Length: 135
Image (cartoon, rainbow, N blue to C red; front, side, top):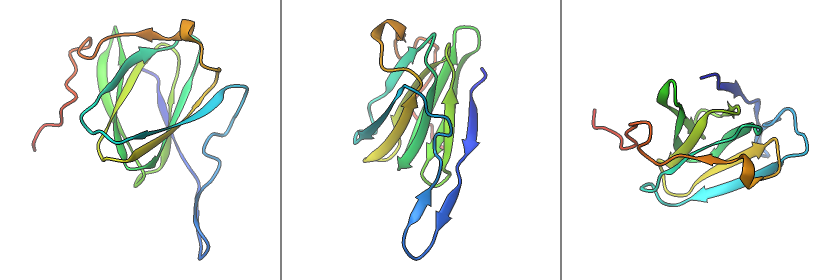
């Protein structure tokens, strides 16, 4: 899978804490924000053939699932404590689960939402386990 992360510039002074230039190249797509209060619900799976997603955690943390038919599922984490942007190119199924109540995900989509470019799969399709194991 060829997803990638980008570090975000951060500036803090006596006025505010700022994350700068979150999404470097903005085009005609759209920016959305999701506030997730449940840590039990899994929002997965879907992919796009045209659209690229860029995800950034504003508050809290998320367990992010990324999957392809060929490679199966892999998990990554987004958190306000490690600010970075996750780029999810076309062809990769993706989804998330909030790890803290009130987590906020901001995401830039390179295309306006088009239902015909959204392909769904069921949770468990990739034999993934969303539950966090005890360690």
